[in-house]
Image 1 (spheres, rainbow, N blue to C red):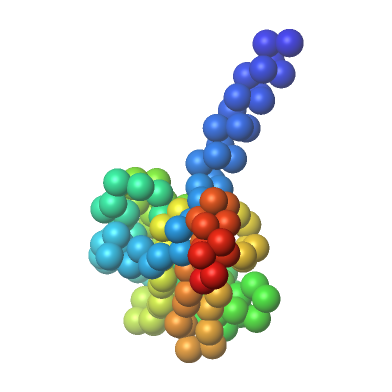
Image 2: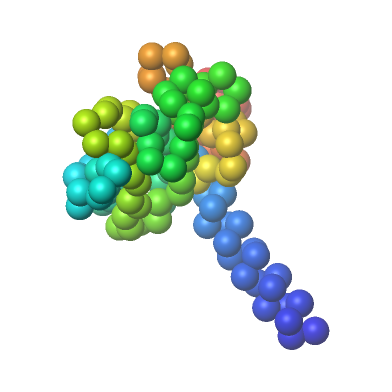
Length: 143
């Protein structure tokens, strides 16, 4: 019984963090992007969320550990990778040296793939979509 309760609490806490509601706003002003250490096969890029709330980030490029490139994203989208970033946390990715990458960010959280948290265009433009009570509020206000 204790094991089941602990698992329930852990899973409940994780899913609540990972799926924080999105208010439908860009969080690009929250991201600090910097080059980290040089690696033999690429450059480490560090994304830091400088805001006091969770955001999610999207990115693509010639990544060290992925064959997908910008434009190969879910549902025909531009961005191929995504991750949640807690308040004041960092995420490191590796890109091939001398290549480019693109990124975007929205307030809230993202689930695996793109299941309605954002839309992205072939040119890399993106729109953050409201979820949960934010979506309900925007629908009630005719937006």
